[in-house]
Picture 1 (cartoon, one colour):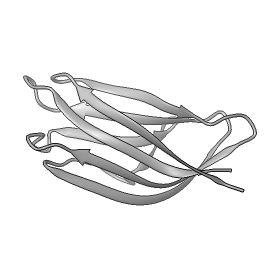
Picture 2 (picture 1 turned 90 degrees about the vertical axis):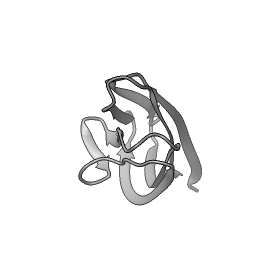
Picture 3 (picture 1 turned 45 degrees about the vertical axis):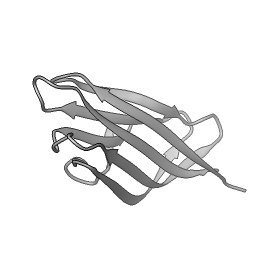
Length: 112
């Protein structure tokens, strides 16, 4: 029986920072099936922080582009099978050269 799980991560991006963070590695003999991602951008982010979700080196959400916003929450459904040993990665880029930008990411799915 699949087990529902969620993976939460708080991004704090320094000025001009671009980084990738592994937030989950699928356990042996299991499969993680994503269902949705929720990205919350606080007021004042000004659309300057780009966020994407990757499976290894492949971008899986959004399909093209990046999540960006200001004082809003983006809820996006996507189905992706992530196999045993593969990594779920959050990639982010702060396009502001002088100020820190933040976002809150919640990835939901089922562990089979």
